[in-house]
Image (cartoon, rainbow, N blue to C red; front, side, top):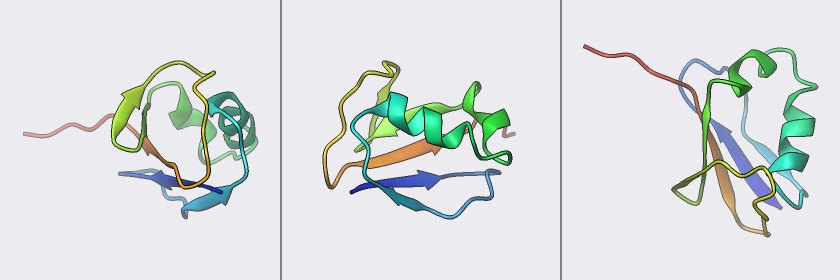
Amino acid sequence: MVSVRFLGPIKEESLKLDIANLKDLQAILHEKAQIKPWLAMSAVAINGVLVEDANTPLKAGDEVVILPPVCGG
């Protein structure tokens, strides 16, 4: 299972999913109305490394973190 966490203003509980790559995750998250608006503007990290390729493979034990943009001052 792959662990998926959401940071910042994305108010969603962590998920455990049996998925093969980020494309599979995107398909699942696009079905969730409260997450969908954040997907286009958020970065994605796998095990602490930022990734952009939707075909990036995932394996059991991986942690995916959805990182929305943040502002600070």
